[in-house]
Image (tube, rainbow, N blue to C red; front, side):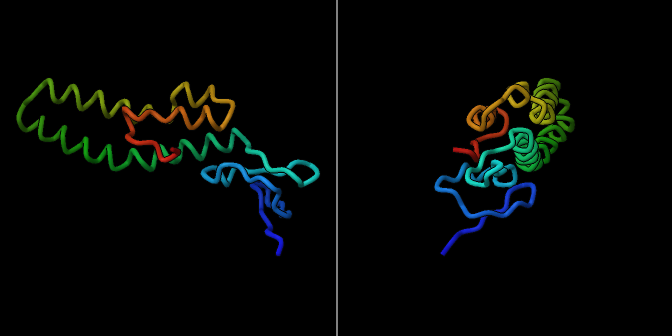
Length: 122
């Protein structure tokens, strides 16, 4: 039985012997002979940024609660810390490590665990 794979451009071909990282499946593309799969780094960056946005949503919601509690308690230092954390979360998709990544390995390494928590790419 032959396994068929569809790349990001809709090209369908028999699966080659090696398949790249499935985290970036929607960034796969075949070479001109349709014998090898590679990843479109630009498409992979979009997928990576979408994953960041998915993960940061609940983190921002939780931080909103922290900020509201600090606001109610009139705790200036807690408000400042919360604002700083929310800014880091909002800025995460624009990180320079993502922009400068030219391989999937470098892109996966751009996940900031101090801001976003454990990487889904390990």
